[in-house]
Image 1 (cartoon, rainbow, N blue to C red):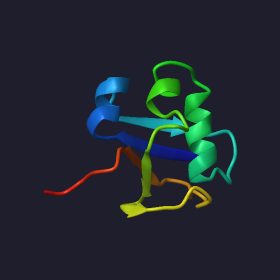
Image 2: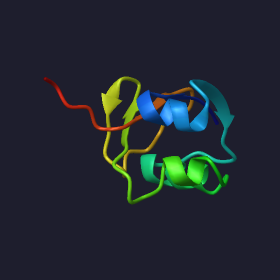
Image 3: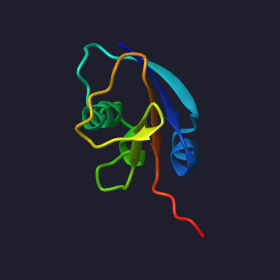
Length: 85
């Protein structure tokens, strides 16, 4: 399963990465298990995506819940909450 990951705002700065392609070993990754998979890579992912940090996940431009199952060829975006003003 191949997906495209995009990182926005402070996450992009922390990871020094705007976009990457990721081949996952199996189908059935949820937004939360994907986040944990990235955390398990170690630093800087562990700090940037830590569970105590507010991070939103969007799949194919829709913000999703942690239990959302990510389809093959999806575009997955990680971003911090944004406030208007």
